[in-house]
Image (cartoon, rainbow, N blue to C red):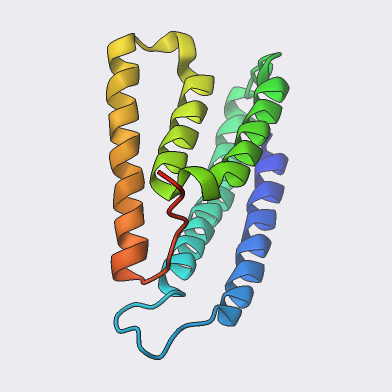
Length: 159
């Protein structure tokens, strides 16, 4: 498990470096004042890279503990591969329906779908309703940040 985490963190760092390099190709208008269209992707890439570095460093502290405790690995859930493919399918539907539903409604439904897939039997109906409201607000806040602050236009949809 430790070797897999080290490899994963290195792959994530390489992907972040690639996308950071590609972010220099993002066109910005001279009329936009403020942070610009490249700020948010670069901020996220930096944050993800920081988490990958922390994950890499964490493997060394776990390796030291594992020598003393003979770490036991948990068996993966049998449904895990199926859930991953279902999430990929939901993501594809989200991408394809984004122009029809718009960013706010499409993103809220996408986040809620993933939430339901991962936590269906672990929550009550009231918690599901509150979660959907929170995800709708989160999608609206992201829409506001991109549209108003970063001036990056998102799909509006027909709704």
